[in-house]
View 1 (cartoon, rainbow, N blue to C red):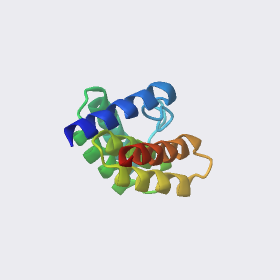
View 2 (view 1 turned 120 degrees about the horizontal axis):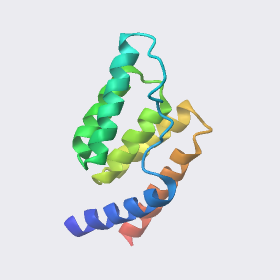
View 3 (view 1 turned 30 degrees about the vertical axis):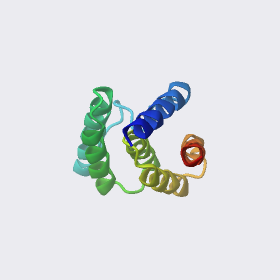
Length: 127
């Protein structure tokens, strides 16, 4: 199981070396918050990005989940949580979040590529 998780992690890292780990246009720092909810969400996203940079993906998952509870119509939050879930081997959760992101924004091509990658990875793991 550990070898399988490590192989998935390596494939995931290679994928994001090409396509970028997290969508950088999620929320720009210079964007002016409109209310307390948005301010709270911005703080959660900033902290989640820092957690990802430090390799603390479980914390990032919790923070992105909290941000989604504040704004469940932001496809990038789902896309980023999808990436985090894939990092610790939750392919089903990753695909679920990626599908939700595409449902919210059909032009979000980056997440569509993640779905394809997860499906291909799952296929190789079953062979």
